[in-house]
Every structure is written in structure tokens, then in C-alpha cells.
Image (cartoon, rainbow, N blue to C red; front, side, top):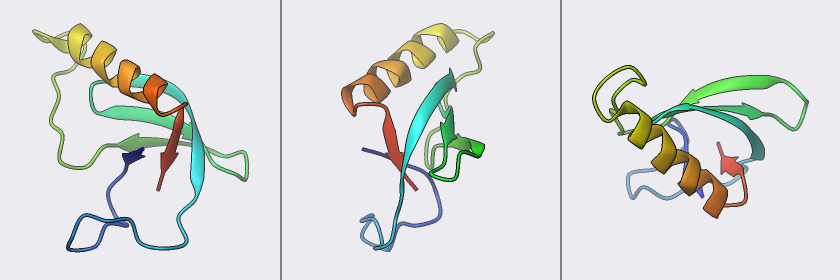
Length: 79
């Protein structure tokens, strides 16, 4: 499971009442676009990750690695 910022407690565990959202797109190594249960799309930056942009050195590799991780978690993210 990938986690966005904002709903983690001091022990880095997810707080109750989170939602599972569908990952629609990986923009780069630290940004994804998700579809909420309401159908609204939202861009999410992952907490604690500072990945290179696509046009920077290792940017394409960084994006590919995040895409691989998203594929491994069946394309959902808990927010």
C-alpha cells in the first residue's frame, strides 16, 4: 500500500477511516493521480520522497520504479 501525507500518526501507521482510491497515473517518481470513491480525480505527492523530475537525471528510472510499486499493490492507495 502506498500512503499519501496527512493521515499517518507518530508511528507511521495509517489512522482509521481511510479510503482506498484507484491509481490512474504515475506522473513521476513521487506523484500519482488517483480517482476517489466519489469519482473525483486528485493529484497526490507521496510523503517523504523527493524524486527527480522526468527531465532530470534518473527521472525516467524513478517514475518506472514508482509504477512498478503501484502495480505491485494492485493500483490502489490509502489516503
